[in-house]
Length: 388
Image 1 (tube, one colour):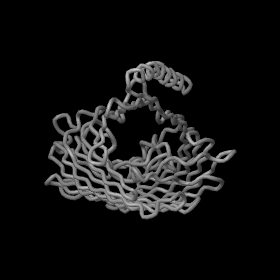
Image 2: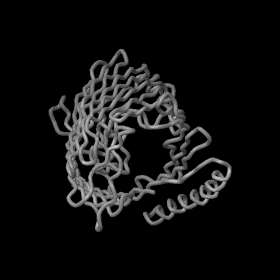
Image 3: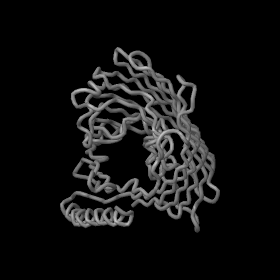
Image 4: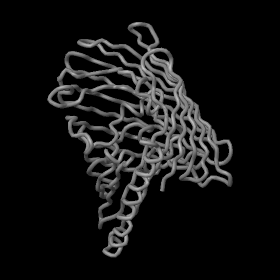
């Protein structure tokens, strides 16, 4: 199927959903309810320079995200229903929940992103890079079914949830978990922000690899979203034994005018009684707006939001990130490997909700049991990003 055909199918799906949603908005207002439509479209292109090891990665064009959401108020409840139609044959649910104000915070029931890691909590619409760090894309629980609560003060937030490891899209994964995240912002003025955060989580995976449950694996995307040949398996549990997982993450971020820097360090321990695995890693990034713009901090949620309106001609941001993840597994299975990635990014914000992105990536995976580099890949990735 050609890229033009794909875009046409996605456009038709989005337009059809909008046509259905807009009359519902009018009807909702007439009956005392509110509804609004939002969405995002991320069109990506990738090119890879692979080494001689292993299979080659497939470059080309990709509809990375095509999301559509309806949200609003229903009496005293807040609701949201969001889907990803980037693959019309496999529509995925994202945020699907109802929420209610409780005890000075907000109680949420349904499917939503869990409270873990600044990198994961920051929306893909405002991130400085096309992909999250290896830490941010592997350790957080992302969209899961559960009950959560979040409260924010003038300089802090406290959030947590209990959740199932299953989601609307994945009913085969069994187990449950609990997570909590605390943040503080002793500096929180525009152009002068300091952020600290701590996340803790525990998960219990029921019989991964047996009785229809998928294996529990740690496979970071090192060189880009479509670089499947460069995804190492750092940890794997598939014997059918229940696995307990403890996770933690420390966050720091600082904004000084057009400059900002951010870092996280996180880790996890996996244990099924016969094998134990430990992983640790983090990232450090630096961002600079060359002409107008600065990163905006949302004190109510303890994360970064979109920039202010860019100047005529747009705002330009340059960013650099170093990313590393180590993993060691002992017992019935032996593994010892690490991956590290350098990413250089450039973003041109034509409007607050419209930008062009360019990422240059250099990724390497090292097997420490063999003392050998098993993959080294360079890639170029671009994105046209629009949201509404």
